[in-house]
Image 1 (cartoon, one colour):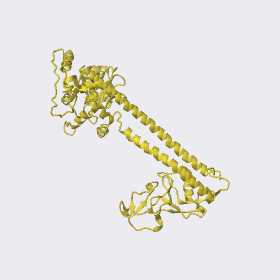
Image 2 (cartoon, rainbow, N blue to C red):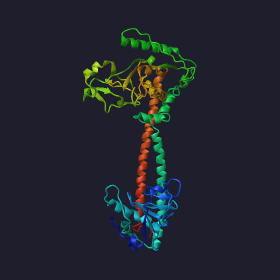
Image 3 (cartoon, rainbow, N blue to C red):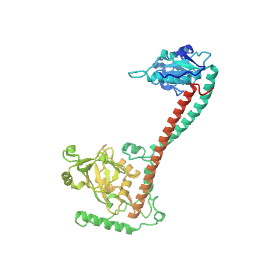
Length: 479
């Protein structure tokens, strides 16, 4: 046990000489009630001044507790508390300090005893839970000054520790507010269930919603009265050229215009049109799992992208599998290129979408990941952000394929609606989304930094608390 030098004029007195201890009673759980009877103080209630359970049965009045009584938890953490919850009954594993000597201020004991309980706790061995007996408590020697000095110390501690406690409550309250804000800022949404839970409330989703209803467009575009069909015609020409290059035969390309006169889709600027993914892409398809499955994987080779690698707006290659180059060449239909949009089409991660970043050399995908290759008239990042937006995610949730099995087929994907505008405006929208997403990331970093500072402040306040108590019981707080 820690040795403390006793101040001049103080005396080391054993607790058994200045107070008595009563341990609580094992009240029968059959008489526990949430509504009727007296509050029953169990060890879990200490420090809360309220109880979860009441006792509705006969009891010995000696186990009654009143406001101001000092209680010590005898299992787990050995903490002393002043009960402020009114008349109640004392359950087992808690003891009450009472019958104080006329030379003792009870609140002085409240402040002085905790350090000695901590010393016992630190040196107590245990199998499951640490336990202290009432006899151990009675054997504690405390340095005790005169009653007048005790009162002065208590008066000063009440004021100083009260101020510290108010500051701690203020810091904790602000910390809790920031934690709530932080939890509302989505990260990569690696878990689809969590994504569904905050789909309508996340800041990022609100940004995407605004972006794809024209709120990020410039004022001229927002106020345009009609569609400039010239950009549609030019897009069709580009798509036809790109598709013909792939198929080596002439394929006419017509961009489908979806009639939204009944407003089933969100309103968009009049210079935009609603079309579908099939009208704007040159390839939609997925891969296969190689014969032999995981046995085909190698330590080094061609990245083989699976659904766990495709997050919302993020391609996570930290645990990517690899396949041999000769196998990759055989699976030529599912080669992945930079700017490809990847969409998870089965399982719990269905709907997660990202873009293959610039500089990505080559890769392949399994059957759970769909490659969507946009024509040059459609910004791939614009498409990826759109597929991650609330409207498409909710649309995916409504699709029921194969009974209870979640899945998307190519027809579903090609038929997904897309708000379509000029390539220049798409580029502008993507830039603004990125800027706003970066602001969220920066906000998240600032909040995390503030939370760390607040935690440091709480530690500092606790250290000040202990320093004040140390001064009090070494005779340095009052003369």
